[in-house]
Image 1 (cartoon, rainbow over the protein chains, first blue to last red):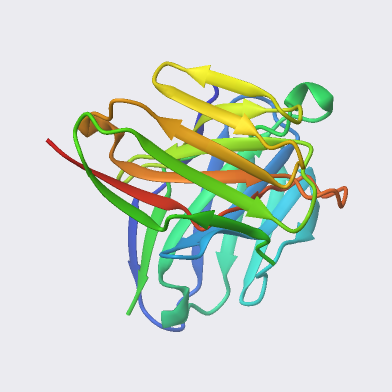
Image 2 (cartoon, rainbow over the protein chains, first blue to last red):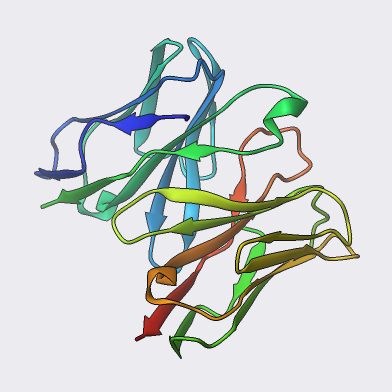
Length: 115
Length: 112
C-alpha cells in the first residue's frame, strides 16, 4: 500500500510566523504535490516537484515556497503566515510515466489555523 | 485555474436512495478520476476511467466517461451511512503538467 504521511494533523500558528508542513511518501514516487482545500473551491495546486530539488509553481503559489532535498520528502513553507492561509493542506504523490495512470495518492491532510 | 464544474454542490438523502453526480469541463480530458474524502481524511481513489464511453463499477459505485470526453458521471446505488463524505472528480489537463485539476466537490450526507 502506498503511504503518504503528513507530519501534523492540526496546527495553530500566529500571523507572521514561518510555518513548515512536512510530507513523506514511502513508494519512491518521483512526483509530489501540495494542494490546499477550501470549502466550495475543491483542491487547488500550490506547488509540485517532479524530482529532487526540482519544483514548479501551481495555480496559487503566492505566499508559499517548497523544498525537496530528498526524494521521499516534500516540504511546504509559509514564509510569513497570514490569516488567509488558514486552510486544509493536502500532500500527494505519484509515480512517473504511463504506468502511473495519472493516479495520485494523498496524505490525511494538515488543518492549519493562522490566528 | 479550476476548469471542472461539479454538481450538485451538496446532497442530503435518505439511506437506501440512489445518488448521481456529474462533472463537466470546457476542455477535453483523457482520464477521469473519482475520489472520496471521508471527514478529516485525505481523498481516496474510487474509480479511474481512461476511455470515452467507458463504464466502470466498484461495488455500489458506477462511473462513466462521457463520449465527448468533456464530462463524467458517478452514481451510487442504495446509499448507506458510510457513503457520507465529499466526492471529487479530477483529471489531468492536456498541458503536459503532471498535476490534476479537481472539481469543487459534492458533499453527501446520508440520513439513516
